[in-house]
Length: 106
Image 1: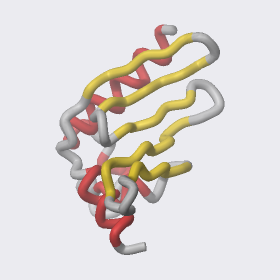
Image 2: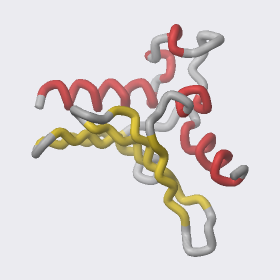
Image 3: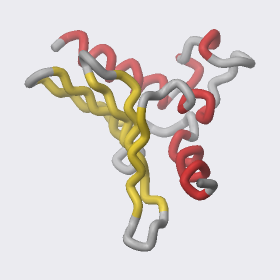
């Protein structure tokens, strides 16, 4: 359980404080939402009946634990067997805006 808590908290902290991201993970060294999304495993869009964007769930880790970022609830969700842990975040990276742009541009 300790590992899932640490991983979920780390992701939530980085989304809330992008300067915590490892700058080597980004081409120009600056955290960028679109570049961050390019390294994710899956995106599930949450849309209304008319197809307008409401939020998204982004799979950022799987296989132990599975970790999703939910931009509708601003929550990082971690699941591993029967264990689960959630952390809230403030979207300082602009992840939701980038996902909205990707949905509108499809």
